[in-house]
Image (cartoon, rainbow over all chains, first blue to last red):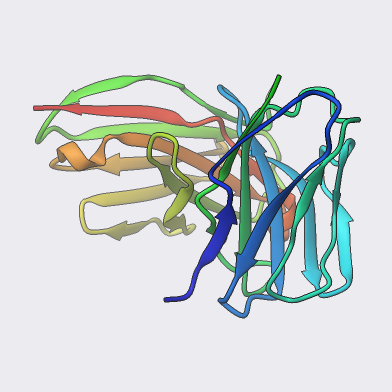
Length: 112
Length: 110
């Protein structure tokens, strides 16, 4: 079955540590996205990539980094520079820039 | 004013009832509109796109009112399984220009 896989589902880290969230898709989609969801707020775009080896900052990129070395993979690193990293992180992909988004099942990150 | 606004609810509705809720948007240049459904602690899933002429999918009807800048979602004969948070999404151009509402929580009671 095609889909998007995010791992791990739950992640706990100490403040000051960098952490990398995995996102893999086998839908052959060109575009991939990282969102953050906080209680009472809409999803906010962190980074997106329209094609391999290219990515762009979203609305809240500060404190995050990404890479897109393979079409299937779009890992997100939450660095120690991110002030409030505790959140629900969602990876998504779409066939094209205007196609519907398909989401992974998310990673819930808690930093203490 | 937020770019996309939704009543957070929760809306408590008896099973079998009809329920409707709106989502307002501020940018008149917005081009396309969607409703997503999100179950508790899960990822959002596309429920339906919203077309200018309105569209229906089974018990669900979505409508767009460009003049007043809102979209609506109507659910008829509500089921317990309809309990979820419904997210309104407005697209200003491409997927990296999506604006997400915070969601309306719907609880269907037996």
